[in-house]
Length: 431
Image 1 (spheres, one colour):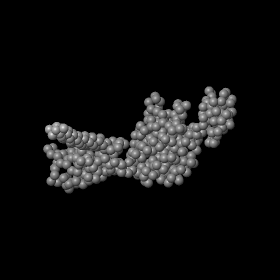
Image 2 (cartoon, one colour):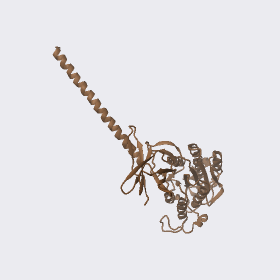
Image 3 (tube, rainbow, N blue to C red):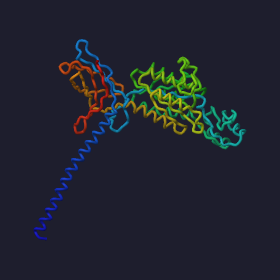
Image 4 (cartoon, rainbow, N blue to C red):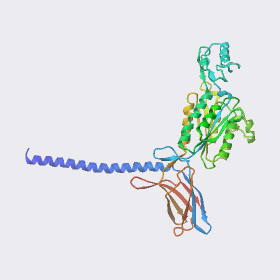
C-alpha cells in the first residue's frame, strides 16, 4: 500500500472516530436530559401525593403584619409509592372488635353421610345441633368441644371441620407483634361481642403482649350478634382512653348477620340506612353506630372483615359490613377459614403503612398576596407526621402590606439542584 492509500485510510479512521466521539457527546447530553426530565416527572408525581392545609392564620393585635401561621399535614393524598422517603411510623391506637356469637363455635360442615338418621347420629356424637330444623341442613353447628375434628372428618360423618373461633383467635394473636414492633407507642385494645359486650371479653389499650394473648385465649362463643354493641363499645374506649389527636383504627369482624340491638336503642330511631325499605332494623343500628362513632372521634378509620363460609354465603351480611366501613372511612375485606389469618395481616399492614411518617418535600413556599403585589417566604421545617400541626411566626413588615390571601406550595429539590414546585396545597383568604 502506497503512502497516499495509507493517508486515506488514516483520514477515514479519524473521521469515524470523530463521528463516534460526537455521537457519544450528543448521546450523553440527550441521556442526561432524559434522566433529568424523568426525575422531575417522578418528583412532580411525588408532590401530587402531598397533603397539607392551613389550619389558622392569626394576626398580632398590636401589629397586623406580624402573623402566626398554623399548617397541618394530612393524609388525604398519601399513597404507597416508591418515591416517598419513609422515616418512621406515627403511634396509633387500634381496637380489634371480634364476633363471639354462637355461630363462631366449631362446625362440622358438608356432611357426606347418607340419610337424615345418619346425619343426626353424627351430630349427636359431636354434641352439636343444626341438622334438626326442617328441612335438615348438611351442617352440624354449635359444637362446644373444639377437639372433635377427627370425628367430623372420619367415617361417621365424612364432613369438613371448621373451627372459626380458633381461627379468629389465631388471626388476632398473629397481628400483636407486628403492631407493637412497628412502634413501641402503638397500643391495642380488644372487644369481644355477642348478644352484648361483656366486661370479661374486653381489654383496655395496652402494648403488653402477654395480656393481649391471654385475653384472646379466654374468649368463648355464645349468643346472638349485636354488631352495633361492639362498635359503640369501641367508640367509648377511644373517647375515654385514646388522646384526641392520636390516629385510631378499628378492625371489626363478623361472621353473620346483625341479630341484636337492645344495648343500642339509646341511639333512638335510625331509619333505613341500607335502603332495604325497612326501618330501624338491627342492620340499620350497626351502620348508624359506625356513623355516630366516626363523627364523634377524629382521626378514626374503621375496617371491616366478613368471616364467611363459601358454602353458605347467605349467612354473611356483606352489604352491612361494607356500609359500616364506608361510614367509617375504611375498607371491607372478605375472609374464610383458610384466609382469615392473611386478611388480618393485610388490614394490619394497611394501618401501619397509613400512619408512616413520610417526607416527600424539602420545604414549603408561602405566597402572600395583596391587590397588586405578592411576596414569598420559605418554611424549611414543614410538618412531617400525619396530623402534625406546626406554627410559624412571620413578620411581614417591610415586605408586603394589606395581605388579602395566603397560599402554600410544596417544593422538592432535584439531584441537580433544580427547584420543583408542586400544585397549590391550600389557600386562606384574610378578607
